[in-house]
Every structure is written in structure tokens, then in C-alpha cells.
Image (cartoon, rainbow, N blue to C red; front, side, top):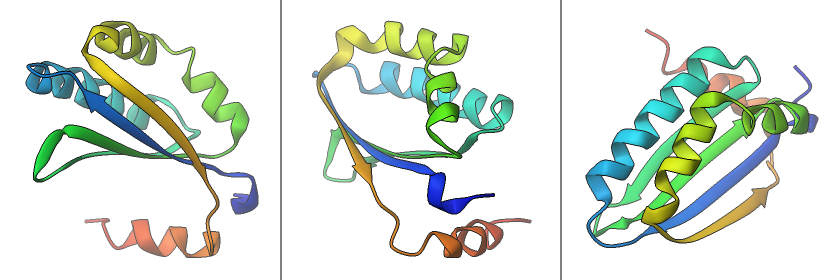
Length: 113
């Protein structure tokens, strides 16, 4: 894999009050389908702030921009996107640059059973 072509992004999402569980259900479904069905999706790792659960963060890693663009057109992403629009107060997408992308295989290999 060409690590230099990867698209790495952090999505910062703030939820409107009262939507946490409903949002998480849709997000879990989308992230699981993306990892299972899309070869170009390397990682979608959802998190929320421990002291402020309405603040969601997603670490997203795609093989390249083409994999990301393809991801945006999948039925599971469109279901998530359209199903959560009314729950989101703000969304910011931060494109990141890996400092040492060659370490990525070692990071994920430590999680293998």
C-alpha cells in the first residue's frame, strides 16, 4: 500500500441535545459496514469526549482520495448522513498529515487476535 496517498481525517461533530443514543446506533452501523464492505476504508474509529458525550470525534483513514470519494456514495454512508442531519449541531472535517505513515501497519497489527 502506498502510505503517502492515504487520506487521514478527523471529523469533529457536536450533537444537538437528546440525540446521543440514536446517533450512536446509526454511527455504529455505518462504521461497521464501511470497515466490512469497503476495501479502501482502513479505519473509521468513532469516539466521544468522556466528560461531554455530545462531542463526537471520528478518526477516518482511507487508502486514498478515490476510496474516500467512493465511500461517500455507499448506501450505508448515505443512510447515516441523511439519518443524522437533524441531530448535528456542527461538523468540522480536519484533514491531517501523518508524521510517520509507515508505522500504521504496526499500530493495527497489535490489535489482531
